[in-house]
Amino acid sequence: QEFRFGSCQVTGVVLPELWEAFWTMKNTVQTQDDITSVRLLKPQVLRNVSDAESCYLAHSLLKFYLNTVFKNYHSKIAKFKVLRSFSTLANNFIVIMSQLQPSKDNSMLPISESAHQRFLLFRRAFKQLDTEVALVKAFGEVDILLTWMQKFYHL
Amino acid sequence: DAVSVLPAPQNLSVQSTNMKHLLMWNPVTRPGETVFYCVEYQGEYESLYMSHIWIPSSQCSSTKSLECDVTDDITATVPYNFRVKAMLGSQTSAWSNLEHPFNRNATVLTPPRMEVTEHGLHLVIELEDLGPQFEFLVVYWRREPGAAEHVKVVRSGDIPVHLETMESGAMYCVKAQALVKAIGRHSAFSQPTCVEMQGESLPL
Image (cartoon, rainbow over all chains, first blue to last red; front, side, top):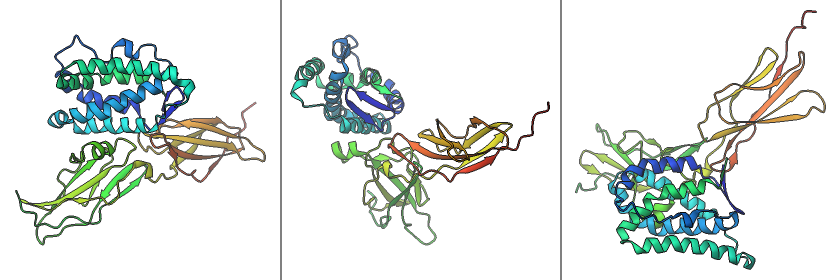
């Protein structure tokens, strides 16, 4: 079992365990999201991502989730008594992040820039919302993120 | 707030074998009284981003035991901190922390126990069930000079697996090792087990 985001390989993470952790929180989390007409991880962010782009995009998205979404959403999670599932998700995102080493080679600049534009699309949509609303929505979209990551997961 | 008069438990340690992780500590004694203990943990995320957050252990939020199975609490291959406090009625001790964070990639992996049998002409192996995180690499060969080794990956224990259709009178040997992908490690190989294929010659 490993992720292969292009040339970036990630081992030691069992994706079904991440899904299980999210399902435990899903109902609690997604019922908090009242604005169903808006989506942060729009199709344009995740559709047709090339293997080469995928390492850059995965790194940007996971870093944002760890540093912004999870960090600021945590106070709600503690209230919902799903700390354990949240911990599983967050700590496994750390494992993935720690192994993602996107290439800094100049030849990859067009690809990293393309991935960056996708990430900016997501972050712009996030910033256009009220912070609390954006946090709830982003956390509720972890299943969209995991679905995309699943494409790069090999048993 | 209960005044902390109880001494904190000492000598916390983790003993981990085959991905079963046991947190242990020394007792806090009060003659004629039963002292309870409470265990909490935090993963690397919590210690990096919100070090004030501790999560109650799924098994031991209040236990008389001097050990706690924290296997279900450790769900990522990152360092985990643990802490324990003693409780007696309304009295609680200070927290006592595990000196060094524990990472499950330090677990001791033992060679798997296995049973090798012959069912008619078939060489069959059954490995011990070590849990969902384990796979097994099984190596088997016919015991004769120059014989090639065959390899088979067995996805889970506790299920008989057919290895080979044997020739009567020949001897076959088998050895196995446990693999844990979540930590990217494997055990040593077990001692080879050999089986001689008795079998009668078929009637003409």
